[in-house]
Image (cartoon, rainbow, N blue to C red; front, top):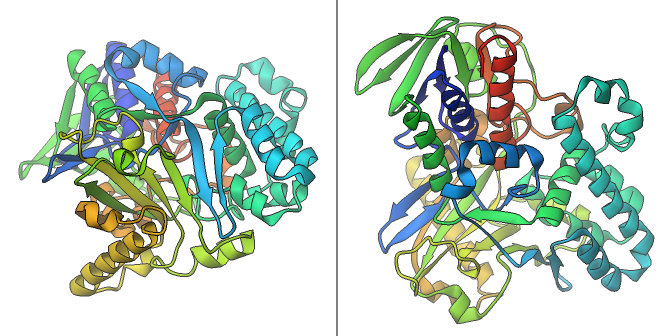
Length: 487
């Protein structure tokens, strides 16, 4: 049994901590915020609204073999309820709306009916993302013989390793609107498909098509709090409001309730970015990788249930009302936050359990955000720009939900600057490194190459998102076990 200290209570740190505590190690998790979870949290507002911070859809809950293994080992399926929506998403462009179903075959058939001239490309696209998705699942749990036979077993992954989404889709399709349709949820991963790894796109999209997208009923805090309870139930400690100020290979120093503390440790697991982690060790950070940009979210509480008012609609919606082509999307994403297209997640369409009063409902809008748009504003200008964004967004929602502005009881905007304050990540990112082909093309690794007792978890190991963060925790626990800490 070893003493393990975890810096940061995001899903990566919580998963690693739960697995390690369950395996018999003495785990102490230190979280600077007042609650654990990072982006996997909720907060309460007047009117009985429980606001979901980050989860729109999580993939792989019942189909990703690594997620299944983790959740079975930790008893997550017995403690946390997951609910899904009927459709993948709806996209509205300047010409019409598209509602993509779940299922590879169903989605291909649906789009073939609308774009019959692109039948061959659609057949190739869906076959390709499915193959790559399954190959990456195999790679995640690869044995030595998989790597020995890599060119034969993973030919598609190898072929498209350096390709962007734009590279591949523009080679498959002529119709510009179809390319937009297949990229509608690009903001889940990156600001633009031009720099997004096609491998990540293929893995994530195929996972959603084949296994649906899932929400944690009651909000993602329930998953985070449950993982924290596994740590404490196995003799570990979870301490919030603990701000880590320094570290050595054998100790961690933190401040809690204005008092400094230093604890000895055999192993350190960091949920922080590598650059922030090495700064704690006063160790130079040598990697130069581009950091992902952030998101701006508008949290909306309604005095009525939107499903009852507007009927059954899609849970995940993307409004690109003025757009038709990828070129127009490129211009739009750089045009400024008040003009940018956005997603609208209507939690009333599922059994989300985010309001005390079932006659009320909660929803969010979300879009790409750049720190530079907010960084130099004084407090009053910052407040006014957020107010303008809320007003402008509601005005645009009126096109699709007439009268929705009159139903708003609560509205609040959280910018990338807000995320930077609460998450303390570089540039306020929730996604780690920018998912370019070069950043994605690497074997996920938790163990630090610089400090022998240090491990990493979270969005810096695989990529951003709930599933990759959880999987990073398992990678960390596995690597610790393989290096002599019995599990």
